[in-house]
Length: 414
Image (cartoon, rainbow, N blue to C red; front, top):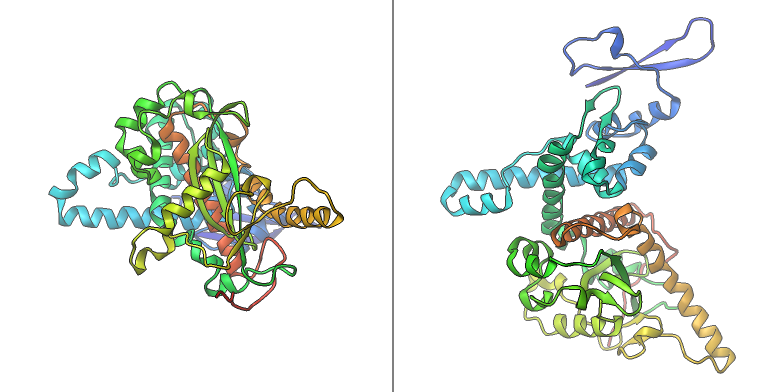
């Protein structure tokens, strides 16, 4: 529990606030700290649960937490509760049917409990992407806590916690990323823009995750079931035995990449994200998404996993999507003034997905060649995508859209 005590400093007109951590055994003079008005306001704004992240941040401000962890403090706290809830539920199930879950817990380590320190350092590692030899830069040194991160802690606590976060977010992903939000519910009614008031619902684009030239990924993907389960891919999806450099080196980017494919709504909400080999182009990826998802025989509970377009539903694509049906693309070459106007109009609205991609790739591991294993890349990618989608969704629920939209009215399909 934190108590705020206001005190006037002798000889000055400055007023400070002293924070006393009553969870400690005693309140000595060393437990007192003078803080800035910004720190005072941030502590007063945050809930008691969110204050724990301010206490573990060197600047003890909301902006400092966002900069250090890479995500808003509200989403960090929400995901921490997801992880703890999953731990409690799995622990209860294991106590009830231990024999069936015994092997599962050995493989996935679901009963291991991670502390808030581990969670904080794992998100710092995800955002700053430190090598094991640089793990001391993940230390927590604040007035409230002093926790060191050595190589043993990094290997046995930080990275396993990062994998746990990715597994939990993978489980919660269907509740956060819903393709049908583009045309149904409150999100669907606000998924309009002024010049496309009806039936234009999504914007697709590809984004590369640059990697070092993989040499062991083929073996890792073929024999590591955890990797496939975490990403949700089958043997056919990952093309088992063919994920080496030959299928990772992209002709467009001239380097080895794992290619992500992102689809957003006109309001910026992430509707779908998938990963593909570097040699796949956007047209083939979009064709595969439509063919695979449109023929899936699923019940109502799995309906959000489908990506089936209505007969007169359209998306906004660049010139790489010209061969895709129901996609409004730019005209090439530009022969008339209308072609120039149309291309400018499409580019104007497609700029929204570039902003979302920049938000996804603001982490250091996206700005350099990824040097880890395939399993690690999948975990980093899962955390970035789902937590960014969660942030955008929560802002939309509060009425804070990333872009200017129109509504509310439903889409009318034939």
